[in-house]
Length: 58
Image (cartoon, rainbow, N blue to C red):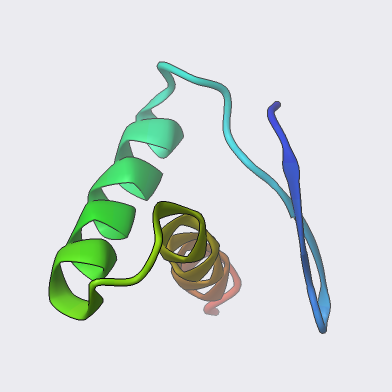
């Protein structure tokens, strides 16, 4: 696994480069960045939050 992102409610380890999860994170981050104009770092943070929210749904 890659880097760790810390959220107010916990932590998430970023997926390994080249994995399907990393590709998904990159796609979400690109959409966030295109739609908001935020920095790449912020877009990855938002994308990781989205991924975490989806993974924790019942």
